[in-house]
Image: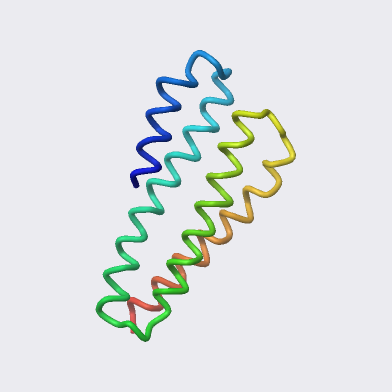
Length: 109
Protein backbone atom coordinates (compact mmCIF):
# COMPACT_ATOMS: atom_id res chain seq x y z
CA UNK A 1 0.00 0.00 0.00
CA UNK A 2 2.89 2.35 0.80
CA UNK A 3 4.34 1.86 -2.67
CA UNK A 4 0.94 2.37 -4.30
CA UNK A 5 0.35 5.61 -2.39
CA UNK A 6 3.85 6.85 -3.23
CA UNK A 7 3.42 5.99 -6.92
CA UNK A 8 -0.02 7.61 -6.96
CA UNK A 9 1.42 10.82 -5.55
CA UNK A 10 4.34 10.65 -7.98
CA UNK A 11 1.94 10.23 -10.88
CA UNK A 12 -0.34 13.03 -9.75
CA UNK A 13 2.41 15.53 -9.02
CA UNK A 14 5.54 14.42 -10.84
CA UNK A 15 4.21 12.97 -14.06
CA UNK A 16 1.15 15.13 -14.73
CA UNK A 17 3.10 17.63 -16.77
CA UNK A 18 5.36 15.03 -18.39
CA UNK A 19 2.93 12.42 -19.68
CA UNK A 20 0.10 12.67 -22.16
CA UNK A 21 -3.38 12.29 -20.66
CA UNK A 22 -3.56 8.79 -22.19
CA UNK A 23 -0.28 7.69 -20.61
CA UNK A 24 -1.19 9.27 -17.28
CA UNK A 25 -4.48 7.33 -17.31
CA UNK A 26 -2.53 4.11 -17.93
CA UNK A 27 -0.23 4.91 -15.00
CA UNK A 28 -3.26 5.63 -12.79
CA UNK A 29 -4.82 2.30 -13.77
CA UNK A 30 -1.67 0.56 -12.56
CA UNK A 31 -1.86 2.41 -9.24
CA UNK A 32 -5.58 1.67 -8.83
CA UNK A 33 -5.16 -2.06 -9.41
CA UNK A 34 -2.14 -2.13 -7.12
CA UNK A 35 -4.25 -0.60 -4.34
CA UNK A 36 -7.14 -3.04 -4.90
CA UNK A 37 -4.88 -6.05 -4.75
CA UNK A 38 -2.79 -4.76 -1.86
CA UNK A 39 -6.08 -4.61 0.06
CA UNK A 40 -6.69 -8.16 -1.10
CA UNK A 41 -3.43 -9.14 0.55
CA UNK A 42 -4.93 -8.09 3.89
CA UNK A 43 -7.74 -10.57 3.24
CA UNK A 44 -5.15 -13.20 2.38
CA UNK A 45 -3.34 -12.56 5.67
CA UNK A 46 -6.61 -12.87 7.60
CA UNK A 47 -7.55 -16.17 5.94
CA UNK A 48 -4.01 -17.53 6.32
CA UNK A 49 -4.08 -16.64 10.02
CA UNK A 50 -7.38 -18.48 10.50
CA UNK A 51 -6.33 -21.50 8.42
CA UNK A 52 -2.55 -21.76 7.83
CA UNK A 53 -2.96 -25.00 5.87
CA UNK A 54 -5.21 -23.37 3.27
CA UNK A 55 -4.47 -22.09 -0.21
CA UNK A 56 -4.18 -18.57 1.18
CA UNK A 57 -0.41 -18.42 0.76
CA UNK A 58 -0.70 -19.40 -2.89
CA UNK A 59 -3.42 -16.76 -3.28
CA UNK A 60 -1.10 -14.16 -1.79
CA UNK A 61 1.72 -15.04 -4.15
CA UNK A 62 -0.63 -14.90 -7.12
CA UNK A 63 -1.76 -11.40 -6.09
CA UNK A 64 1.84 -10.25 -5.61
CA UNK A 65 2.80 -11.60 -9.03
CA UNK A 66 -0.27 -9.91 -10.50
CA UNK A 67 0.73 -6.58 -8.96
CA UNK A 68 4.27 -6.88 -10.27
CA UNK A 69 3.28 -7.91 -13.80
CA UNK A 70 0.00 -6.01 -14.31
CA UNK A 71 0.77 -2.77 -12.52
CA UNK A 72 4.50 -2.93 -13.24
CA UNK A 73 3.97 -3.30 -16.97
CA UNK A 74 1.55 -0.36 -16.98
CA UNK A 75 4.02 1.82 -15.07
CA UNK A 76 6.83 1.07 -17.49
CA UNK A 77 4.56 1.37 -20.55
CA UNK A 78 3.26 4.77 -19.46
CA UNK A 79 6.70 6.20 -18.69
CA UNK A 80 8.60 4.73 -21.64
CA UNK A 81 5.87 4.44 -24.28
CA UNK A 82 7.00 0.89 -25.12
CA UNK A 83 3.68 -0.46 -26.40
CA UNK A 84 4.54 -4.18 -26.48
CA UNK A 85 4.50 -4.14 -22.68
CA UNK A 86 0.72 -3.96 -22.96
CA UNK A 87 0.87 -7.51 -24.28
CA UNK A 88 2.14 -8.86 -20.95
CA UNK A 89 -0.32 -6.91 -18.81
CA UNK A 90 -3.04 -9.59 -19.21
CA UNK A 91 -0.66 -12.14 -17.67
CA UNK A 92 -0.81 -10.06 -14.50
CA UNK A 93 -4.58 -9.91 -14.81
CA UNK A 94 -4.68 -13.70 -15.01
CA UNK A 95 -2.55 -13.89 -11.86
CA UNK A 96 -5.09 -11.60 -10.15
CA UNK A 97 -7.95 -13.90 -11.16
CA UNK A 98 -6.08 -16.98 -9.95
CA UNK A 99 -5.31 -15.25 -6.66
CA UNK A 100 -8.96 -14.34 -6.05
CA UNK A 101 -10.14 -17.87 -6.90
CA UNK A 102 -7.55 -19.37 -4.56
CA UNK A 103 -8.54 -16.94 -1.82
CA UNK A 104 -12.21 -17.84 -2.27
CA UNK A 105 -11.40 -21.56 -2.02
CA UNK A 106 -9.17 -20.99 1.03
CA UNK A 107 -11.81 -18.89 2.77
CA UNK A 108 -14.63 -21.31 2.07
CA UNK A 109 -12.89 -24.30 3.68
